[in-house]
Length: 171
Ligand SMILES: [Zn+2]
Image (cartoon, rainbow, N blue to C red; front, side, top):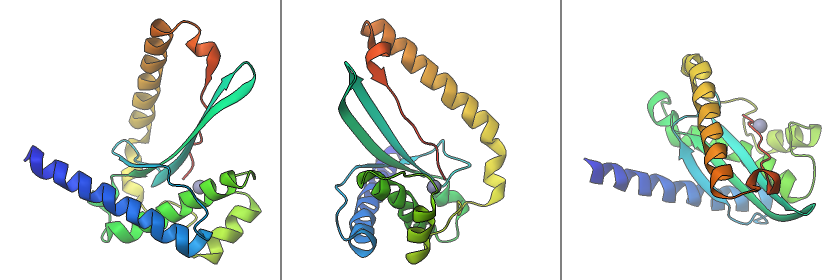
């Protein structure tokens, strides 16, 4: 059973990366470097999220890590999971694309224009009933983040001062 799940996970991961290249070529002229793409079982209210982590040392950016997470709930709540996953990935890639170009990457007029041009959805494709557990999910997420912070600052002195996380929780 565990083996079967792992096989599924690997296949889903590969398929997500294929989708990235497909959309990158179709909607973004192939300019986007591959970033970390994953499924997240804790995303209930959002279909996906574009994240960026900025590492700053002595006032200078030393690293910028970008990633996209897609909700696992599509596999249980969508009639056509991969169609919805493609739509959500397209949405998150518009955030990434604007960020990649050094532009504001929120839901700006340019964002909406690009979204519309390629027919990606503005809102999550997940049905409303999956959003009921939002509060629990957020609390769990915050607790885990606090635990991670505690672990980090205990392990590496001044880690808190050197590391700044910039996260965007966007649908
Ligand atoms: Zn968005």
